[in-house]
Length: 369
Length: 265
Image 1 (spheres, each protein chain N blue to C red):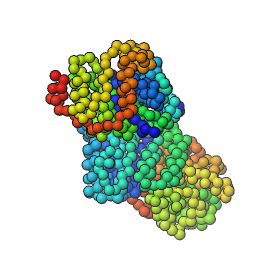
Image 2: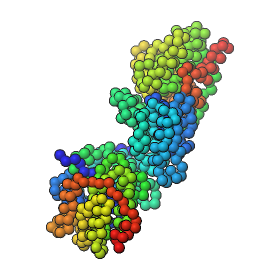
Image 3: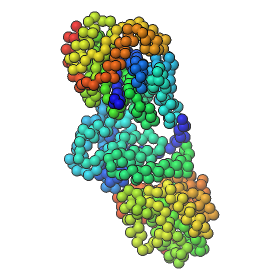
Image 4: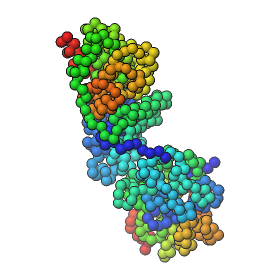
């Protein structure tokens, strides 16, 4: 027997939403939420920006009492008639799981041509990665991914959960959200270091589509260094391997590299865009073997997944999109921590790098030099 | 090798499902079968007479304490003649959600139990009233492939049995037979026999009302263990053989209420 996790007070990411995002990565065209109309509204709306349609069976009080089987069968048929999707997902919610709805029975009864990925999930799991795992298990069952990819993803999810428990938003029973340090002040410090001839590593270690904005920091730093004539003092690491991950995730890496074009040279590829939980080991080896004498590091995306031993002696400037990640990063020893507020919504439905606030601040200050 | 039998015994609350289930389990174990009994009632008393009157920790007891179950020996206990006993457990009456409890516990058991696969017979002892979705979880999750209905010749238990037949067809589960647990009312065997025939099934056992069943239960034992040489023990043995040999499950046709009343008049 094993004791369960500590009880965390702040709201946490939802496994239902995690399942929806995973369905999107699996190129599902329509996802049906089997539950109340308001469940996961905000993310359902955002996902539509990313090209996946999300609909709901809109269970009401009567649905809770009498069951929602028929509504789900109707909805499956309606979705096929109206949208003719090539791939469909059905996702459980708290209420439908509590009353014992069987997604599989409804899917069998609806008898559609398109493959349906069934995800029996609610939001009551300590680790929201459970939603991802259940979606992938189901995708494996219907033959949309192979066992090798499934096992690779499973490993990454375990590592992601470990990182969150050790250094992330699941590391304390309560974490105060924070906007982090002022971008202007930190940008000034970066320029000061560049002008003083200090050497810096720019590490992009981002989760999937969030890289569309975090990559802007790599680009901005490059531009500023060039302007100051010190571009040789900067090396770029990025988890932009185009051969790893689900097809959609690889595509993000391709888009970003294409957008960087000849302006930015990525010196070291540290993994795929879904490998942010494990890329830290690669970073550690690279620094130990080649980049020991560097003075500072700018880390964007999931900075807390980079082991601190690797960064010893460097002044750290870290950029996250999680207001609850600020205090854990400061505790780890990151000197400057910045938050790109509302980053995620801006990175949905795009195929180009999106301007970041910190990138814009760096550029403006460099212009004023 | 014969395919594994996975049965559920349904019937009105208090009609003797647990007592029948545990005596059938014991009788099958006597015949050398590997048997598991899974109590799905929050009262968790299905297996008590196979364990000498002792209670075992339930799956939900362990989960409630915030513990993870990793090995099946934390929740699967051997009773009389190595019958494997499991109790789902549940919340206190009036709080939480017993239905969800069954879903969670059954999923957990399915995941951790290796020995389930080796069983010749698994009996799910389900609560009398299927009041919500969770109570059919064993069937819905594909765990049960045959159902039995237990009733007496009284009107209310027959009414419940008839309702259960409606429920079974809704969830695509076949009925393998009707068992009569006698309350010593008039024309009982005739009435239940007729009921069984009219719904398209058959009466597979008539268990007479005997004080000895109650006496064994009070001591915490099955009839097979404590009074194996009695006539009633033989009735359970015959029923057990019947269940193990059964191969004629049907889709039951529930009767109209008037017909049911006529039968019992």
